[in-house]
Length: 296
Ligand code: ADP
Image (cartoon, rainbow, N blue to C red):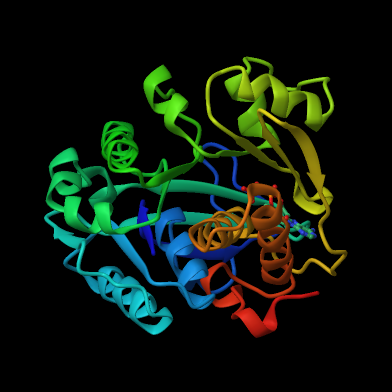
């Protein structure tokens, strides 16, 4: 059983030839509206793999909230802990240029109302989970509270530090694992462009206190590190079409396998296969595979 604490956003995606500068207007293609947000993505990825998954989060009383609830329902994510808040559903405004690069503005809306009291109200669900997965498009204080309750209850806490945020030493010390991409690893170490190789970086992150570390490396796979040492995890070679939500797919799959009792390296190997499958298809949630679609 997996409990996800995190965001639910509508992704409003528009293709443009180039990004507008300040004061400038450019015309784009038709807007594509997709269910997204790191929390909802992670929950959908985990549920599509057949796990029992609940999301704790918030949406607004609007069309985008309905879109997200429908997507969660379709994937089999339990949504009784998704509160309807009195702010609009979170929205990610995404422009995509022909080179495939995204630039994104996130308006958190209802996600900003995910509170420590919501976490307290969900304490039974939390205690009943094997793994807690959090990401940071909801307030850090709520995530830290959830991690503290999980650690107390013997539930394994995993934080995907995306977007980056400062965590207390106490929170870091509970994480098993801390999951970051290379950019987030650099931020944590105070080096925007770290010169060290990923295995060394993972060892240095471990010194910040978490029980284990995973660094995702895009097409190069991932590195996992525990007190026993660091190992590389291979990424299957695939033709990437759209990498949106790959990190969320990785986190969701990792949580599922950890909840089933896999070791960290084994779970990360499976997560890399799930994430690689997701990049061969468009979108985030619609691109996530079921167990029999995961590439070998
Ligand atoms: P984020 O999306 O959070 O920046 P990454 O880019 O590191 O994270 O991607 C997360 C994971 O997705 C990687 O560890 C890898 O397993 C998988 N992945 C991403 N891009 C590719 C790719 N081009 N080919 C194969 N796997 C990929």
